[in-house]
Amino acid sequence: FQDWNSEKTCEGHYANNNGINSGKFTFAINSFSEKFQRGVESGSERIKAIRKSFKSSSFNHVVAKGFGSSKKVLDPQGPFLQRWNKIFVLSCIIAVSIDPLFFYVPVVNDDKKCLALDEKMETTACVLRSFTDIFYIIHIIFQFRTGFIAPSSRVFGRGVLVEDSQAIAKRYLRSYFLIDVLAVLPLPQLVILIIIPEMSGLKSLNTKNLLKIVVLFQYLPRVFRIYPLYKEVTRTSGILTETAWAGAAFNLFLYMLASHVSSLDWFLGLLGTCFPLKGNSHAGKVPVGIILHATAHFTVTMTYLQSTTTRLEEMRVKRRDAEQWMSHRLLPENLRERIRRYEQYRWQETRGVDEENLLRNLPKDLRRDIKRHLCLALLMRVPMFEKMDEQLLDAMCDRLKPVLYTEESYIVREGDPVDEMLFIMRGKLLTVTTNGGRTGFFNSEYLGAGDFCGEELLTWALDPHSSSNLPISTRTVRALTEVEAFALMADDLKFVASQFRRLHSKQLRHTFRFYSQQWRTWAACFIQAAWRRYSKKKLEESLREEENRLQDALANAGGSSPSLGATIYASRFAANALRALRRNRSRKARVTERVPPLLLQKPAEPDFTAEEQ
Image (cartoon, rainbow, N blue to C red):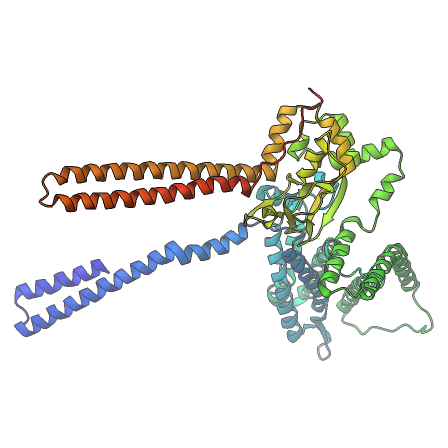
């Protein structure tokens, strides 16, 4: 804009210098050019401002929101992906139901007694197929951003989520990427809309075979992709398998759909003769293949029902008993929903198997090996257990119990006795302390995988002279997400703690202090109190220096002042004001110095060296 405007201005000046135009016309041109120049400059400034604002704020925000969301790794067990999997399974079922429509595109022309294409069916099949392909494309994009559970961490709960983009892409490329690409290729549309119209003569008779091969070629991967998605949906949310009959009906639908496609394929093969088909003269005969086919499917369906009915019946009985008990006790709806959510979550993780009872009936050495396989790798993620030997780790694995907590559930409340120590494997928790609510103190921190809570119990267990009364919790711990952890009960911790004092007492003390929420909070308050004392001390020193400097300035100016009495009065007034201000600040500082010890007491340190002495 500026270059174009300067060029116009130069042309105007050139015309004016040559004397081509008259004075009025020249004046009008000059005034118009000046106004136009100001308008162009203001417009260019506005455009630059808009461009700058787009680059700095809104545009970057939109780009970051659009591309940043694509870089975000999705949790395969999160609510968003669970909803998408349900939608995609439904779209896959609709897609495999639409594919047989391509077999209805070739029709017999009664006048010419040959094959032709039904244009309405052709358009309908192509449009519906293209619409369902959009879901496949979106699913492929999501698969490159969907994390997966590490196989080595699946021994307990849901395991560890892998969020490395390269590892996710490699895993997807090696698993279902080729199947998804084959399923989404628009081959039927290509054959119907491009290849068949270009063919003529005897070659057109082979188009039905080409269409048949293409549809069946894509039908197999599209049906094959449904099964793993179906298993994933039923595993994470329980949909379609709440009853055994629902699962059997789903399998029956897939079987009927496959039989429909196979029959259409057989019928399409007969259309190539362009002759009327002669019916079977033996009306009473039924093909043996149909009977065998139906018998085989009936056997498979009954086997599925028998294998799933027992376990699902147990789940329904437990759910019915829980509903009856909640109704009998008149529990509010929020408590009922929490109970239902916990039972569903436990069912998804354990499939109704009582693991503790199962392991309790096994021999001791076998139970120890199983516990070591299940817990050892996860225990080593907790810094408190890194310094232990194998014998003590075996004892820990034998006494640890896996626990599950649903979202928004309270693990322990401030002021309640602590009866277990939790070592978090997965999930996010919020821990809050108010020091009993006596001083208005408030502190909150987040806990994640590798952290622990209930350290008051460890202090109690390591004290050889501790009473039988359990310690009181100084914090409230609430689960923000679904939490999986190992719990060590008070009696078991008492036994393990007796072994602690013989192992790396200094290292264990430092590790305990570093990861303990009590010690972290106390250390933060201690540092804040020391900083406040230092700041107040510096403030007093600066006030004292200002007072001395003011008195010196007043004393120096008093000798040359015409009113010596007024100067002395002003200096005394300023000195008294500064002295009163300093006295008030020092009084407040002394009060605040006494307050921090009352806000948060120093935590009791575990006696790691009692037996060493």
